[in-house]
Length: 378
Image 1 (cartoon, helix red, strand yellow):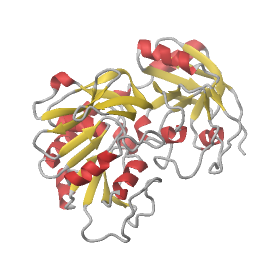
Image 2: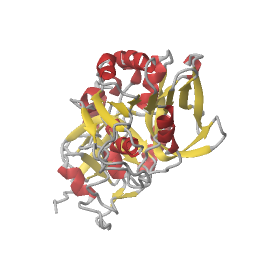
Image 3: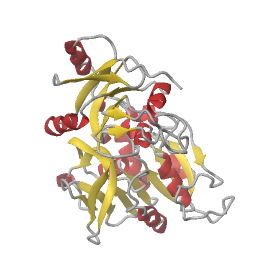
């Protein structure tokens, strides 16, 4: 077991707010945009979600770590956030699947974490003031120096985050179907059959469970880097295109907007989270930054086609501006907390996209049927 030092630690916000606690992870200093997540479980998935790249994530639930960390539930091969903020971490990891305590996991991967923070007080502050830059440090510095460190952090909109998270090469996901979703009712023929459809997944920071669920639908899944051209993708002769989740400001991705528009002319398209925002931009819509984002596993969304209410997992800081929506796009889902767009479809083309995460694990499974809709669309 690794030694947990519990050194003093400081969380400072650019507006001058300072929170003092103790270190639960690596030592040093980190900067990023501070946000909060309201999930009661799923800290391992949050830590390994590429969409959190460049962020300091505060968990509103007061006790974490009681079920430890295992080898199967990571959403990517590394930890992506800049720092982790929690109130209390359990010293006991009581689960038969656990291999490490949460504190050991953070230290092993060099992630700064601060405990002893009233995360609900921090959350209320962010709900009033909005997300902002912050610093997290175990160095012996003054409050003023910690605030200055926060103010010196680059804005999230200024970073090329996709370049930091995307794959460097094209690869085929799980060709033998051995890594299906844990509830995987679908049983695939092994190996691939010639009649199986092939899709291309644009990796903007794609989560493993998205790939598992696409594969569990009997699709052959080819993953490509974020900036792959439309011509390169069409040369692969796919039957459909998927645009994944990911970090950063969707308005910056001008070349990807053009690629998405071109591919939508030729193939059925499905987008999740950042994927929805990219497809919105591709057809002329714009996005805006939410005051404090939607991050958690309990967000109510209404399917405007049926009236059905879904409980969804969400993780995004931007939304489509409804006033900018072109007539070719129709709103299919709406977030019931603030009325923002939670889903779109094209009126004439085979294109659907959602702002929430139907693949959520852990989380509600209300929207799993969207993967079946994509297959039917293909």
